[in-house]
Amino acid sequence: MLLSITPKLRNKIIGVGGDIKINIFKLNYNRITEYKIEDDISTISGWNRFTFLMAELVDKDTVILIDKHPAYFTSNYIRDNFKNFNIIEIPHHFAHAALPLVETKKEKIICAVFDGTGYGIDNTIWGGEFIQCAKEGFKRSGCIERFQLVGGDLAVKSPYRCALSLIHRLDKELIDFTINHLIKGVDKSKIDAILNIIHKSKSKIFTSSMGRLFDAVAVLCGFDKEFTEKEAEPAIYLTNIASCFQIDPKTDGVKSYELGIESIDGLYVLMLNRIIEGIIKDLRDKLAVEYVAFRFHKTIIEATQKIFELLTEKEKCNYCALAGGVFQNKLLKEGLNDLAFISEKISCTDISLGLGQIFYYLIKEGYNVSISDWQS
Image 1 (tube, rainbow, N blue to C red):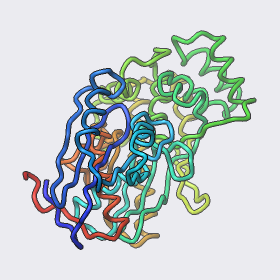
Image 2 (tube, rainbow, N blue to C red):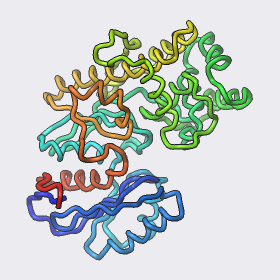
Image 3 (cartoon, one colour):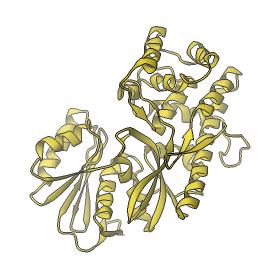
Image 4 (cartoon, one colour):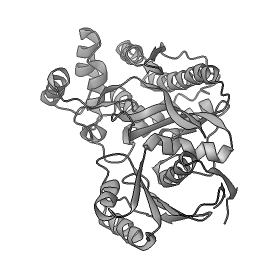
């Protein structure tokens, strides 16, 4: 890939990306080269490939861009082993959003960035974000409502924790029904222990992650593994169930769950209680789980559309885009593809995050940047 960059760039730049699944990108003058790491960073082969590439690619005038997350193995490796280099931390979701901004060559866009885990500029875990992107700067303009991430990263592997976090504010009748009839494959003593932590813990981690919301709804709809075995396993389960309903999400006539969008501290926030309450009531009333899963997808599509409408009017920006791994979801893409841009050339997942880090850095430093040649 060749870039058009003005003024002329003098440093070499490496975008390290995120964690677990990454490729490394290097910008040398105006040429981007992608260095693939086939295996997860959590494997010996993946880690060895990562450390080998860093040793080979870095030289004295290299700027190294890393994810802002304080616990990413990749970022901490760079912090510990390249202390004499210019290391710059890049906000995870700003890097994602920079990709469509540069690809579309727009002056300003509103980008929905939906993924599983990313460290926000407010030191909470983001993942259901609406980012206003422009050459003048990036800012968070909306998100889904925060909920507790019980156990931090443990909740990623144990999605029932997310479900419990989302139900604990509901009526006791709905909580009891959920525990007794919907959450499966988890011992009751563990459920009680997590609820106790939710209510009494003084040290709490919060997230606005769309990926974790999908995990929670998957549990309510029958995902019965206490621990996941693969990345995005609950979300894939949920989407597969919803796809069995076999109705076009644009024209089906199925109503979304009740939407509550509030303006909080300058952000448009999608409130979650009514959605979760509606899902549990549908399941209590013995409506088909395929219908419930589809209706949830329809709700996220309509909520995204509504927040886009609010932000395009508020920010005087009429171009919207999608980024982040959640948009591998076919139903969401089909439901939003007439409204928002999603790249067919650059992956929406963390595989391309290093490229987004480079784009964000160039924009922030005042460079004018565009893609001049995809093939080179």
